[in-house]
Length: 76
Image (cartoon, rainbow, N blue to C red; front, side, top):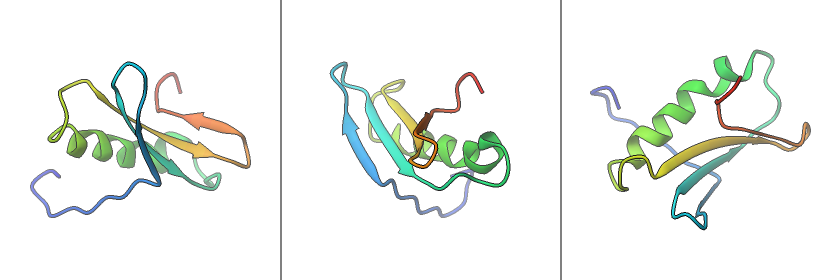
């Protein structure tokens, strides 16, 4: 990623009914904004997964169980 050796992991991966690959991380609520805490992680997930998938068919999200919130980084 950005010319550097990178390792990523997602807690859950699946395809929805439209064929979009989802990469989901489960995380505790951070002390800072969601964008600051997880924005780069989601961008990395999508960027690296798109090398294996058709462009535009990959999305990533953070699930915050304590807040019962599913955050994709859109509309923050």
